[in-house]
Length: 534
Image 1: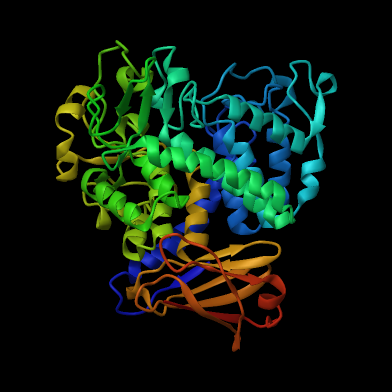
Image 2 (image 1 turned 45 degrees about the horizontal axis):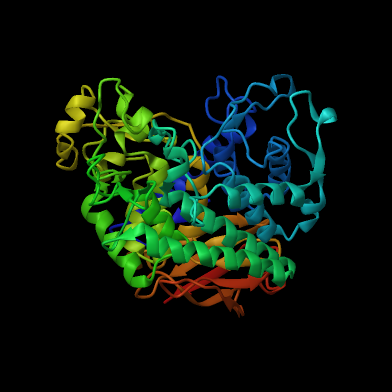
């Protein structure tokens, strides 16, 4: 890929740097995908269930490489426990099959289903649902019970519907959610605590499964998923939004009392706002346009630092090893990753939320904060960083957690150096690849269609990108209009392309162009695709 920005644009250099980092993000993501013992740490380790269902899957979807996703999904479904859940992580080689944890966080069960739904929608390969695969057995696949992938899915769905807060459809916390630092201390928290972020993931999974079955032509099954999603959305809005602010966690006690944590009412943790549920609700159209705008305002006021989104408005207090509510958040001595509250994975989803909402300028700035090339031009307090790799966090260089807690406000003033966290690590590089390809350039390839939905600042009007799309060389030219989002016309080699408008709760949506429509005007010579935005 090569990006050429219009001369004179104040954003030209940043746009071209996006093209420079793109192949390196692919390289970083492939390290995780292609190293069986190194999806997380290349020197050893296993496949994290939530990680392999994000980074590698999103990388391969962005590149239009569908065949390896099927193989990946089969490997993941072979690791499913007979009760419907998956382990937090598992080893790749059969000789190490019994090296795996005995439990997992409450969000883990959703990720394989979501990845499956995304694959089905992109490929139409519904033969995968009939593929016979074993459940995990400690004695190996020959001793295991074998069922179709669809039966595996049904087993997981039964577990999801059972594992809820009593009297609701809201997912119970279990051993935690995406934020590994918030593993509960009190046993009853596993049954009575609800993560609003996990609820957004539950909703997203049902909506994705509904879309997949509509693609198949099975409207009845799609309606079943849509009905379950609607029930969750109603409770999400009614129960988890309090005083017009979404609580990060809700603690449902016996007797009907509910404590709202990571919320302005929170008198337990001292934290008032949580980024993850807000941005994932925006991504999944769970807010009204007015709500989404208000939450983006809250994020700008309380959850942004010089280098991007923060998990919370302040670090959690350190208790010197004593644990009251959350294990690692209260006892880990290392101030970085989730503990340091600038974990880049969350910032990536903030980027995605901005793109979904249609804030072209905010999205582009957030996207550039991922890029280590010339990072100090955008983040002056950043320390020098290796310029060709993804960093999983941006860690404020405090001496210890006590100083970090008392002096955290100095980060926003630029008085504390920001060091790059672990390199070439996590699913973030694959997600970053998709953000550039599908959200910035707005090109999402499926077997039956091309979806076009760029979000580009108007200052980059005339941006040109040369790339290979489904084996065809294209020069893509962007006419950004006044808003930098919402295609109004698309032209390929002088031929206007007909399209069908997608849906978006917040702005003019992207468009779907059937494969035969967009491929028919292609030639053996370099092709020009011109996209005009609203």
